[in-house]
Length: 338
Image (cartoon, rainbow, N blue to C red; front, side, top):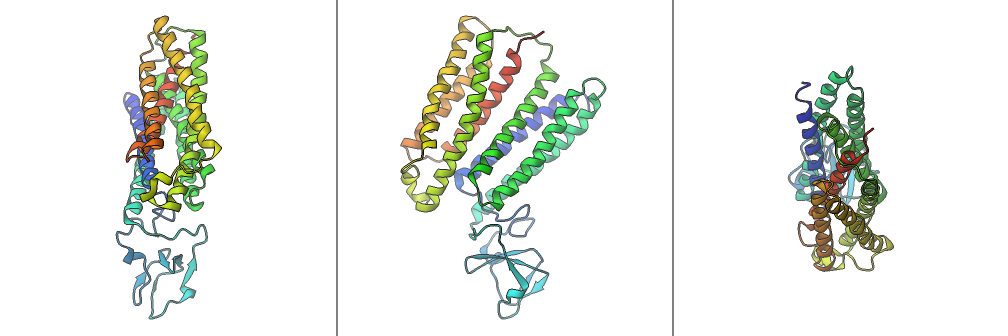
């Protein structure tokens, strides 16, 4: 197990990025409330495939905890029951955590797959903490980081529930995203310790400071981006997916800050690229960072000027997560040794 630890860490990183990808697809398709409850979906472990399954009907059996939609309201069955000819409110309690009462099969299964990816990642993290205990005598940092990542994953699961219960409150979504980035940072630190801790890289004080600024800027930009995305979601709810040209009608200050802040990010990272070339520092990750910034900029422009083409939102979000990951790993490489 000890020899397999580097692969387990890599698998954990991949699983986390798969969660980001699944989450990006959920946001892109507006499927965040596809399941109104958590961890079940309409009271089912395997979601319904037809609206008929969650519609009240006479002479029909329902298990305790199952959710139905009646008169545009969610109701939860109080016990196992078989309905009579008339709807009996005594057998049902109104779902009060939110008032979103819509069924869309595509949205439901999109959100369910997102949750399924998260569950599978959870098993990977269990392997991670088990394998990390083998390093306790040699390097306590490894198990401590592993357990920290695992407990943050549990916190992420709770945040996911809170996101649904709050009907996609923007602040909670932002915290959800930032905590995910923190977990990525922990895993990348683990990867560096077990694979490159004894590798010596050239150190340049100005480059390192610009890199620290770039990491901070990326966190700010991603957090602000989740707020902008929520504004777009609200506009889509108001005008419908068929009227995407209204998605950025009368945008808030957050949008203009998010768009203009890109200039600062480009300048800082291109400054790093210039120093890496001129001083021959040898950091190959800088080239990928510049590419991801270019991809972020292009997808951002397309979303604004081309009415959010399909796929650009997912690429934009995932590229941002990859960008932060590369910057953070580069920060490990560029730190002064000794």
